Amino acid sequence: MPYCVSCGVELNPNAKVCPLCQTPVWHPSPPPPAAPYFPTQPAVVKPASKRSLALILTSMLVSVSFCCGLLNLLLPTRHPWGLYVIGGAMMLWIWFVLPLLARGMPMFLRLTLDVAAVGVYVYLIALGVHGQDWFYHLALPILAVACVVVFCLSFLLRGGRRSILTSAMLCIVAAALFCLGVEVCVDWYLRGAWTPQWSLITLVICTGLLIPLLVIRCVPLLREEVRRRFSL
Image (cartoon, rainbow, N blue to C red):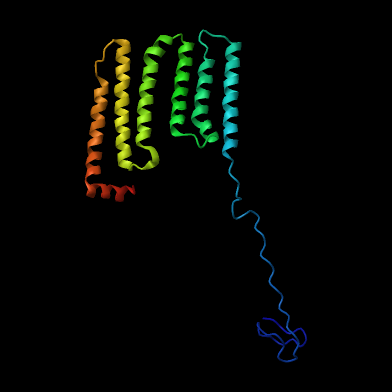
């Protein structure tokens, strides 16, 4: 309890003056709270720009390509394995770094560059193992099939206007057609004729996946139930 500094009488904690001698009562302000030793909130760090991230990734890929190419020159072998690393770095740069630098690139051009990067990488492997024959008669047709399937799928899925069920069905059909095209290319390269085998198994599996999705897509009650349960 506070006491008067003049007469010593006990005071009310909220008293302004002493009721006995009318001496003003001074109430000292409480001390400010001590600052914490460690910050209570994490500092806000500005995220790195896409150009900075692209510069870091580019420097990493160039450094790895240069070191592996130089090592391959200093330690020559039968197969120029440095080409594999350089081609892989170039392919990764086109896949991941180029979209950071060219954000407004059309999807058609981006997919064309992605497929071309894969083709150049496979061609470098063919040069390393002296296998230009299988590149032109096997790898290039498979890349052409992949290119056609990817372009058709991107055209059907453009704009994000398709539902998730429809998009899943289109992806399953694209995977089945790609497997079918791969087997046709392999059979024509090895045997000169197409003898369907494992691609038919893939078609049956894809058909088994498509039928339930098609039923859900066509029945409104099932479609709404799936959307409610999976928040689609």
